[in-house]
Every structure is written in structure tokens, then in C-alpha cells.
Length: 119
Ligand code: FES
Image (cartoon, rainbow, N blue to C red; front, top):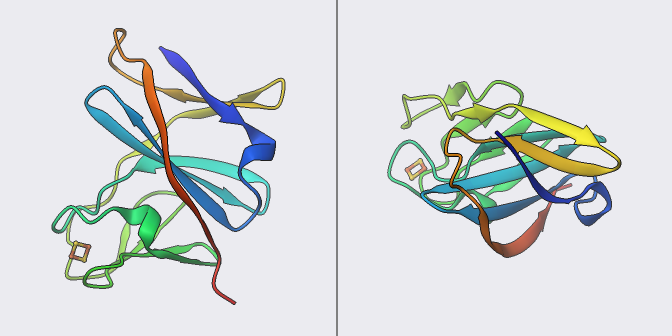
């Protein structure tokens, strides 16, 4: 089931935003106009990744600086060992949709601040 999160204009290139769904937290990242939805907590110890930093296609965790590849969630640098889950994402009518496994899921909060790419 796909769920609408927000409009594409709400997340500028190089920014990311967290959405809290029931039992799932999703991080939406805008990489040069391409949108990716990943699990929002670091697979190492659960840091909120929206507080991390984006540099090109790499997301760095704010706590112990693990690095993940945005496009596939793979670990580029530990201590994290488990990749981040990447959710199927669709853009329709300039809106961002994410595929969630929970049909009862609904958006309960659009949360957390935007984080800009470091330059
Ligand atoms: S919580 Fe992310 S590297 Fe430890």
C-alpha cells in the first residue's frame, strides 16, 4: 500500500525530512531531484538519521558516524553493519508516496526539521 507523505516541493535538493507513521519512521531524502525513502533510525544504535549529514549520495549518522549509501541503504563505513531498509517510492502529481507493508498505517506526524547538505 502506498501512502502519501508530502509534496516534492516540501523537500529541496540536498535536504531530508522524517515522517512518523504508526510503527515506522521514514526518512525522505532529496538527492538532486530524486527522492528516496529509507528507515529513519540508524541500524547501529538507533540514532535519528535526520540529525545526520548528507554529502552527495552518502548519509552520515550523527552519533557514531556510520555512513550509508542513500540509493540502496548499504553500509559504507561502520560501526553499523546492517544496511538501512529502502522503501519503494513513487512520485505522482508532484506528491511523494512510500510503500508501507502496514495497510492500517497512516501518517501521524510530519516531524523533525529539514537538514541541509553540508558543503
Ligand atoms: S547509532 Fe549510528 S553509528 Fe551508532
